[in-house]
Amino acid sequence: MTYMIDRYNYSYPVPGWFNVDSQGQLDPDEGYTEAKKSLNLVLDEIDRIKNVENVQYSNIYLSGFSQGGIMTNYLLLNSRNELGGYIAFSGYVFDHDFPSNTLAIPITETQKSKLDSKKDYHILATHSFNDEAVPYNSAAPSYSYYYKDYTDFKLLSFGYLTHVLPEQPIHPIVKRWLKESMGK
Image (tube, rainbow, N blue to C red; front, side, top):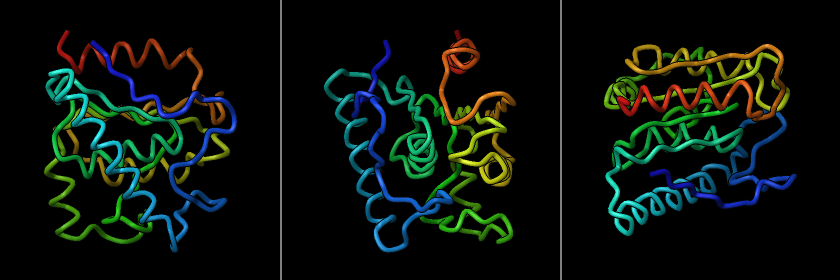
């Protein structure tokens, strides 16, 4: 059984959950506050689904596109419980512990501990080389840097897409990945 948290109807433009500048970086004045508020709203909704529908956390999969992909990574690193898996479409790694998303800064012991505690999570990320909204050259290195030691992390890159989430080729890939992650 699949549960979808559908906050918006996906008509264009879709409202952002937190403010970012034209480079995709958080607005320093309100970005963290808004991101944390969004994080807690989604975590509370996941808990509600688990309790009301009597579903195990391991049967809940979270995904998001663009800012939703960024939030998916943020939720992965801050989840109260391990979910079945995480799928980030056209996002990058964002977290309070990694505020600048800059790869030149070595990972601290606290950051390493946080990453290591989640290294067995099922994670799929997709990104286009031609993504103009969330550039590939900032997203892919963040995944490679932070998730490099993860046992079940896959980054699938596409050359001909832009900042869109088309059914093809994404749908069959996600379907196959979900079957593998669920052990079916």
